[in-house]
Length: 228
Image (cartoon, rainbow, N blue to C red; front, side):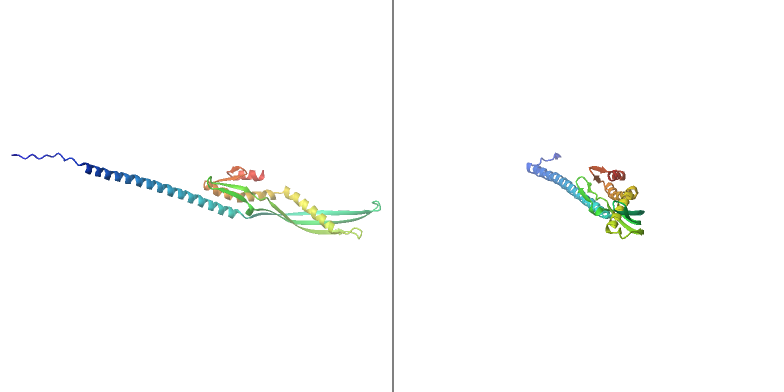
């Protein structure tokens, strides 16, 4: 008699099927948890990296502003010759006593911008540097005054008042010469050149530079603001 062997698999019990289901579920739960951990880790690392970049940019910009923060000085020399005269009259202007002198002036003039006093704000969130205040120019006039061909009398001698008058006249004349000269514009150009170093750095780092409510994009914008 031939023995018949059946190849049909036996049915698994409920407990075996449930355990297999749990095993498969654990695998998927582990994969999902791993994915979540990787995502959160990436976000954390990315955020830290972004914060580190902003902090690095801020420190670099502050260092550049510190380097720019110095005394920018432009020097000039002026020469002038004037004649000073004065009269004292007596007896209903019938008698007068004159005094006069030729005055030669050589003056050194400096125009300075103390950028150590410049004020600014840093907006890290919007990556914007705002220049709040640029110090005004400081003009210093150092005249050397010499008197020649001095004529005076005992009734009308040179006094301290005369020298003070000459000094005021000299300074007023020099101030007019400075205004007409290129000294002040040269000083402004040097100022713009120094401030542009900040602009170049901020632009290269993707930051914005703002002054008087407007974004500064190039030297021309600075020039229009400062010379306008």
